[in-house]
Length: 121
View 1 (cartoon, one colour):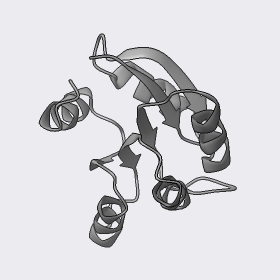
View 2 (view 1 turned 120 degrees about the vertical axis):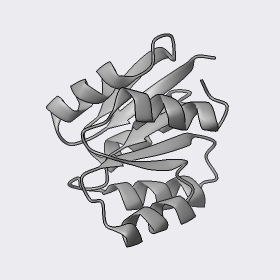
View 3 (view 1 turned 45 degrees about the horizontal axis):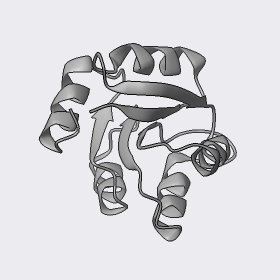
């Protein structure tokens, strides 16, 4: 299976690392956004099936993106990758529909394992 992937992080270095962490053959096309507002705009303009999402960003944070995805009933798989590793934040994003919460820096094996667990890779 291959997907259109959106990587949303305010750090260009983190976006680059996340892109390199994508399992080989997973991405048809990779889009990038530096904040949640940009991510939602990309999702509205392109068929994005997988979103790699940071939590702490300007303009609209990752929680806001998850809430908007839920409110609009958008069909996109979300994996949160963040340095905010508090247990209550992990619980919150999973309740909002994220498949998993992976601590930064993103680990290729952990991302692959998550996607495999949900039948996406």
